Image (cartoon, rainbow, N blue to C red; front, side):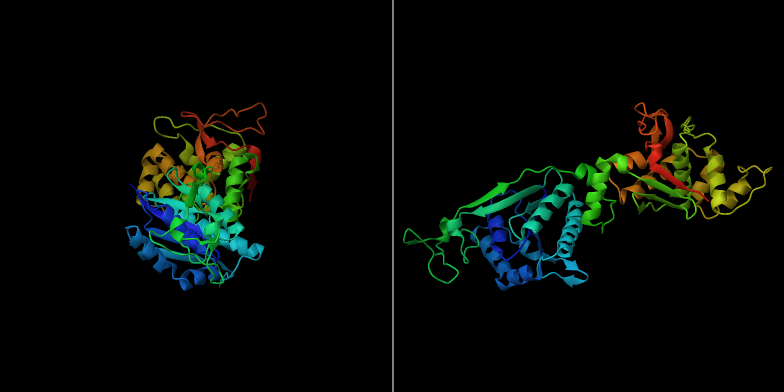
Length: 400
């Protein structure tokens, strides 16, 4: 059974937190961690009303574990380095969305914990962001809910139905009456409504995504993955930079040269390399030539680039493992897998789902799918040619 983290948005009514905890009191895993997204106003209200003390009393009243009290995180979003006291502008909303995105992503990276997310509190925009962002990263065992109390029982001194008498009052201190009788908090009904939602984390789950990636960037990455025709890959040979959808793919020199070669091959629709006997025959020559060019190393035409001395000169700063592997085997399956893993990981830092699949190096059918070869994609295969599935028209090369 996984430990549970309760996450919630908070405005001016901290009772939504205690009401949610009350509704979860019979769960097999009562939350032992609480994360609250709010403003300075919400934070001040939370502590001025001593909500931690009320949570403690709730735990005492219903014999619940009090470990939650040791892990309460009140997160206040910042805009331009200043904590938000309210959500009044587009910039404020964006700051709150980014804060929720980064925290929820980090929490969902811990697969030893389940998350229960509540959208009961806060402004409407905060609740929307919470629900939508949660749908991007939630795992199958995470839950989303809203908590409701009958309107007649809404009172400033009701934080949860107590097991003992708690006469309710209005905000002016007068008794809260119904049909001439003062209402009692112990009779209140709390309804926790579990909200079904579409989990998008099959596309956004890779934990390699940049940790500070904004809400807008996450949305853009997801939308691009669902609209592959909008993907754009640029190989800038002048500055030795590869970018996908305006996001730089950070690679080592060896992986950059390897990726650049297959980008060029895909752009030109030239597919000539297969892994045969665990080796890509002849590819090492082109890779070494490209590396030599990048490093401004001149090798005479009558010299064999596969000569050990030339390999050592070209791969001077490379690790011994790579150097000896290239000397002995050229580009073998192990080195191919190492480069592929580095490239895929680098792409996944800013891209998701279909974008990674289309832009990464893989085995492909040389013949594109569909009749229009300029607008179609190649299907990945188990024994095809090495290249990219991407449409050649979406590859742009800036040459020296």
